[in-house]
Amino acid sequence: MTASTGSKVEVRLPSRLGFEKVAMSTAASMAKLMGFSEDRIEDLKTAVAEACINAMEHGNQMNASIPVSVVLSMKSDELEVKVIDNGIGIEKPAPAPDIDRKMTGEEEARGMGMFLIQALVDEAEWVSGNGTTQDQSFVRLVIRMNKESE
Amino acid sequence: MQSVNKVSQQQLQGSSGRDVTCFRFTGDISSASKDAIVDTYHSLDKATHKFILLDFKGVEYLNSSGIALVIQVLMEASKSGQTIAICGLTAHFTKVFTMVGITKYASLYPDETAALAAL
Image (tube, rainbow over all chains, first blue to last red; front, side, top):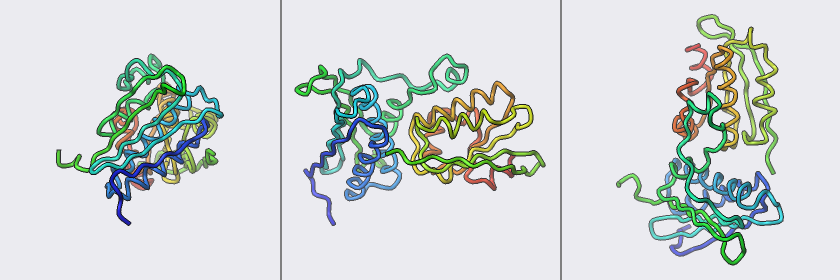
């Protein structure tokens, strides 16, 4: 089976924790078709899961009736994943977690999702919408085939 | 949709003769795993369980909310003078735990045998 450049897959998830695994599996299958290495696929799976969880929790406020859309697009040397929700987006990405501050309770133990996304994919972009279905917020993730040679 | 998370507890002995309490996790480690991770840890007598091994070999899915629960245990263990070791992580999650700084407060080992040899 050969991956086709330009192929696009869309998955719609209820905003219910656990369903992010459906998007993870889809992303992993597409990345495998494109020939990504196992370690890159694991990076992508975690990034997609974290993006979906953020969309469910912060974007759609865990309203199960509002779906999270995940659009996966195969390009010649990269896989792009857009995770779309009905929230108003974020002002700026969260800073890197500080384990020392977490250990003293100065920083919440949670709040590592955005850091992991940024660290695990080649490109991560957060685009804010206005909370309507006409202008939705999304995070755009990209992994590239030639990362090792850069 | 979230798979059932289970934890089993076993008393082991490190190579130096220390008693080691091992928690073996299976299934998902996520925000729904507080019972399995934090509450199980709270069930221990902190005065007598000084060395704790968290075994992730049977874990199928782990996310940042699950990692936050591990950090909560590390925080409480640090205050109580307990030593936490972690084993059974995949190469990917060994990288992730290292990235978020957990290795500063807990040693990671590939498997139980390696962990017990060091404890």
